[in-house]
Amino acid sequence: MATAYDASETRVRRLPAALRAPLEGRTWREFLYLLLNLPMALVMFVFAVSMTATGLGLLVTFLGIPVLAAALAGCRALGAVERGRARTLLDLDVGAPAPVRPETPGMFAWVGALLKSGVSWRHLLYAVVHFPWAVFGFSVAVSLWASGWSLLLYPVWFWFLPDSAGPSGIQLYGDGRGNTFHLDTPFEILLTGAIGLLVVMATPWVFRGMTMVDRGLVGGLLGPSRLAARVSELESGRGTVVDTAAADLRRIERDLHDGAQARLVALAMDLGLAREKLLEDPQAAAKMVDEAHGEVKTALRELRDLARGIHPAILTDRGLGPALSHLAARCTVPVTVTTDLPHRPAPAIEGIAYFTVSELLQNISKHSGARRATVDIWRAGGRLMLQVSDDGTGGATAAMSADGPAPGTGLAGLAERVEAVDGVLAVDSPAGRGTVVTAELPWRD
Image (cartoon, rainbow, N blue to C red; front, side):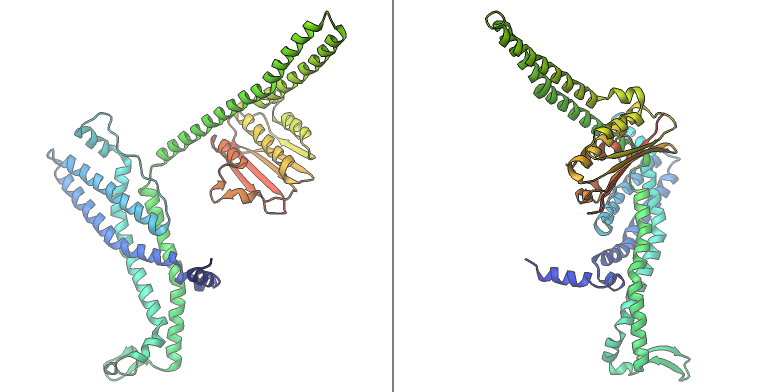
């Protein structure tokens, strides 16, 4: 059931973006962030400068090193507060850097690891660099917000000025000799309100520009290093590869158990019965042997299909072009394959490209309702590009989330397999206009 809040929210969203921006929660959160910048930056700056200066001054004694370590540890703790503030008010989710891990236990090892940590020194740099920007941002935000709303509401509060202030309104000029200029005529009052409206409308966009600088500072100095992020990405990709391999093994086991193995068990039973009937009813035994011969052919075909699903021989022997043409010939929809490769990429990349196209062509056969499809594969710089498109009903984008394919879908599995080798999968599938899936993989000779 719709609530009053929902209705008001709908009315606000019907306004043009320029008029809606001053009323949006995002603008107020960014304004609050800029206001809090000054006290937070002041605390961090004073702590960082005082502790660092004290530590450097005491380096002639043993006490300087632990003081510097304490300064870095304090900056890391304040950096965690800053990441939380950015997450709450700016919707900026910056991961926490890896904690300090000394090679050996003990206080001295921890101090040494802290001093050698580049992440810790980046937190100290943030404390120093952010302070002047916070002062500037606070001043601009307060000035724009106060002046804009004051001018916009001037036609209202002008009439409520106390008599002691006089009826002349705001004085813009006065030389002390009686020559003054006040905003007191109806035109001047309305013009002041219009200028205030322009300032109020421009203020949210100024706030967004200034908070973009804060986003860059928080993300660049308070988050994990690029190397650590890359290691985490590779660990995640390795986990995806392991999960995919385990799923493939379970699929192969299931196919063998339910397909060829079950058929071979039945075949052994039929041949046993045929042997028993060989003397008493040779014709029935011969018929059973013929049926068993057919079962052998079926089992061999299933085993060939299974082996092709593991790694097709045509891909190993002849490469991607002939292998993709073979896939296209088996598709229920006419498929045109265009290949432009100077030579073959790494076998692992070939395998991922092959199975990506295979999965996409299966989706086209089962779900697209297309009349034709195309497969294009080429090299662009150090990347292997492949694109599969069809003229079907589209709508695959409905299974996409903001971060890519929705978990649990076939596209999600493909995206994970591609991303595991530093690739990218993009899906464009508007309803009623077909589907275009583009994959970019590293070449890796």
